[in-house]
Length: 113
Image (tube, rainbow, N blue to C red):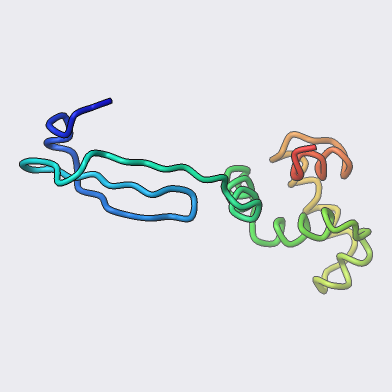
């Protein structure tokens, strides 16, 4: 375990997030030892980070959410007010960005099955 003197010169950062609590300080004596607690991240937070990591556009995320919900292309098209061909174009892009070749594989990847 690091002692508080090893924190001198580190930027000051106090905070709390749903997934962690942390305290760091710089300059002089650290008022408290460095403490970090970790909690499992909610599925929605993990999904959001995953989608951002893949670089999906907002519309691709809209299509993906409906694919994961089990909707066929025509239903997705109707809900999003686009053509079924446009849905397929978005899916091709999502497949390329996520490295999958089918809806089944895409859903399994997104749900970590």
